[in-house]
Image 1 (cartoon, rainbow over the protein chains, first blue to last red):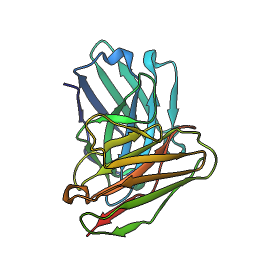
Image 2: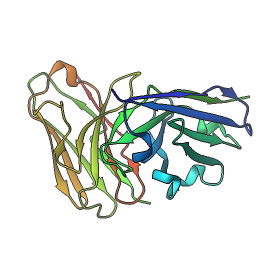
Image 3: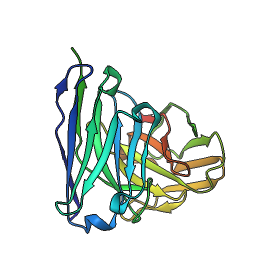
Length: 121
Length: 105
């Protein structure tokens, strides 16, 4: 059974940093690209970042480029999102997600339960 | 950036109704479109991939169509479990979600 479990969400002050983790199991993690998607309270889904296998290709949505860094550790089946210079508008539930296909940014069939990031003073 | 516009934003319907949700892309995305269902407090659930491919385990009352810039999600006979918010997602160029369509009674 595929499982994605996020952790690391917390209350942080504006300008602060946070590192989210996603523990994957039930599939060959190294064979799949991965994504982070967020959802602000009461708002629509927003794709945040994508990382390919072997970390060769990385994409970010414009609002987070230069502040967030996606990474992966295939040895521990883990996905990460390092979030720096956090702003109030980064407040959201953050999901890690995997696609149906090996290398895809869409068609996300497996999702974690999410981890909540709140940026507030 | 590719913008995705869903309509309507809210849809009032009854059990048994045929429901259609439209998603328009600001430029052609070929068939790189997915549809999701989301219920309060839960992660999204993939319904349709590549515009019209029904995901395994999804009831056949759900169908997707379209290509280029205009896409539709159809629920042929609305069931009580279908009352939720639906999102489209383009993945032709990076990724963008639509703003969502809430299907309510």
